[in-house]
Length: 118
Image (cartoon, rainbow, N blue to C red; front, side):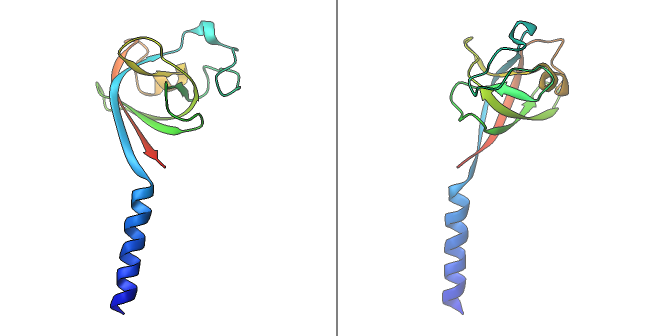
């Protein structure tokens, strides 16, 4: 019985180490309307009405949660593009995602980005 418990514990430890949560903090901005209809790095057509984002290094298709540190509001987005290419910014959001976290008037806000690393 003890051996099965040890095997189960080892399995839980190995499983939990395979997928760990990562957080990143920095500034977020959102896409201007001039990107509407352009192809993203993933090949998809950019649409302001979708909850998508650009990140410099995360694999395309990664799902992340973005938290506006000014008001605590959150949004889940899909990474489908590369960027932002402005120093100090870690993520660019679509207009729909930016609206969801209440940053349209600010333009740039401090955020926390959370995702699972596989």
